[in-house]
Image (tube, rainbow, N blue to C red; front, side, top):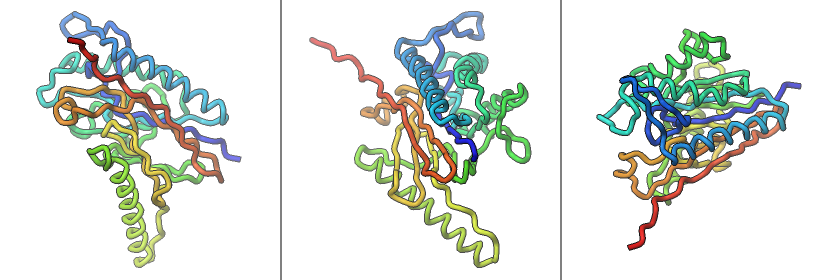
Length: 289
């Protein structure tokens, strides 16, 4: 019997951001000085370590192989004249990435998947993510590469013990509290319909059909929403590892990010088991006058 797989999906770590996941420091900067993360960011660091212990427990529970999937926006980058980064020198975000990713890499995963994020964060062609995952591959880590040799994917389609899993960074979600879930369900319906139409076209040309994915992971919005069984295709929008930025305070004042990750357990002949570990940051202090 095929061994179960645990697919651990994390996204939107935004390494280099002053309000995103970061080790305790000191963080080396480009002018021979150092920096330290805030206590709120150290809370993220504690959750990061706890989350990967949780993943390891799930792997042991099912006696499974482990696939670590980074679903885009690994780095914050230097964009839009942003002020909330530790340094405009890429060495700082690279240092953060190496120390933060050492936590999941210590679990010795059987597979690593890098998904390309938003170009404003990770550069044209996701060059910062491509360089990072290519570096892992060069060190002998089991990075799943494209046929032409690229170490990252815009979309990665998997057959995991007979289950169709799909990973891509950009999805769709409502921006208001009462539309978040409905928009994800509609997106699941669109994927189902579009893939069904594609198969109808293939049949008309005498070409083999391609199976619909059972589960699609999407990210980018820093909110967790799950379409569950509303459609034939299930869509999960993943949580993030970044607190509110200045931009979020401007365009989504009421929004709090979901912090955490989602795991899919794929056992041959059984339904996919989905588990999540999500926390909410606290709101700002109430001042008494």
